[in-house]
Length: 127
Image (tube, rainbow, N blue to C red; front, top):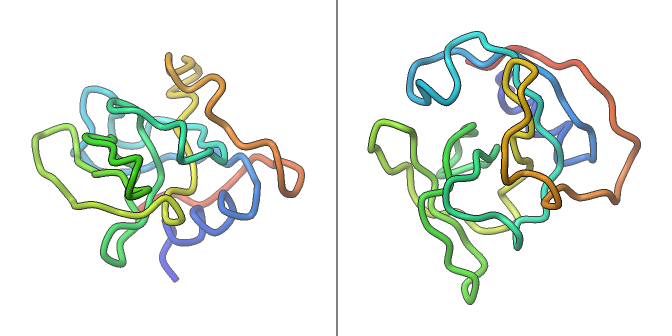
């Protein structure tokens, strides 16, 4: 299990996780090694432009929602450089990015899931 898989598992279990993902695919929204906070999400509430933690074709990404298909209960995931990772079902959308380097992400409020285990901070860096 990779670092992002471990983060996804914790978020899916109800934890709010703080970690520092690496990579440049989300610049300038998230720069490599910036601290992010990801909270469990109600996938039915996500909108285009939200940054979510989701599994697409076996890989976990912290990427943008680029399209929403509510009737089929799925979202399209893309990076911030125009690459589309693909569609994924609501059950594979684990969390929403609520904060980057201490700055709240507008639009994330009201989309978090409050059921499940108590939240905890911490986590592993992404790949």
